[in-house]
Image (cartoon, rainbow, N blue to C red; front, side):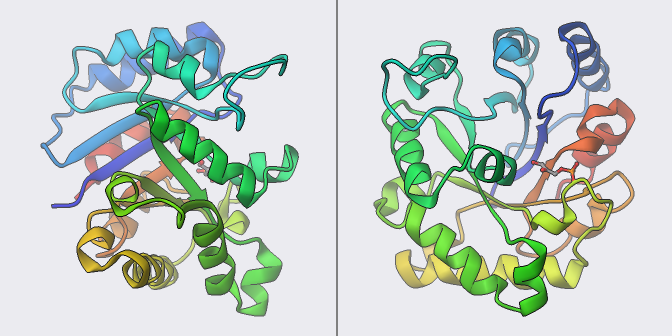
Length: 253
Ligand code: 13P
């Protein structure tokens, strides 16, 4: 079975102490994960090592960075490279979150470089795509998201792309409390998989987890994750509340 993933994206939230407490509460629930299930905490850079050591003993719990730089190294004050993450044994990294695309002007071409640097450093990218409201209203969301995949990922060989994680996050559903309906989520996830299949074949496309993100909560996770092409979630707000995220992990197929 394809990996089913509950990924927490803390964004720029929690003090160090709050983060430790949150992890203790979630891990304290001792939710057993099957081989095909995975929980990932994407935490701020200064919390990576603490989080890594918290999850070290836990089966299928892991840690991710929320970003890495698109250059290998050099005079980029304040930035963090994929090589640095690798040297800290960090094995996942969120790439191309819509907030970074918007506030840090990250382009599809820059994200292709980030994805390459992740692979060079044995890091699995959690690659984000998703359309803004005006694109959804115009009904052109399929073209929009397929261009994001093509321009940032389709230079990869099948051996690499089959190990990636994709997160579809409609921007109009992020932090708004407005969730895509299960029909909307399944429709676009199935479409994304068909775009992957057209380029790489069905076998590869069927191996790639596609997570849904955008106001995933304890009370809608089960329904969203029950869609055949939704392989879990990338969760912002609800990942900051232990009781919420615990239910979201339990909702994994
Ligand atoms: P919310 O779950 O707060 O809508 O955020 C989604 C998101 O951006 C996760 O990366």
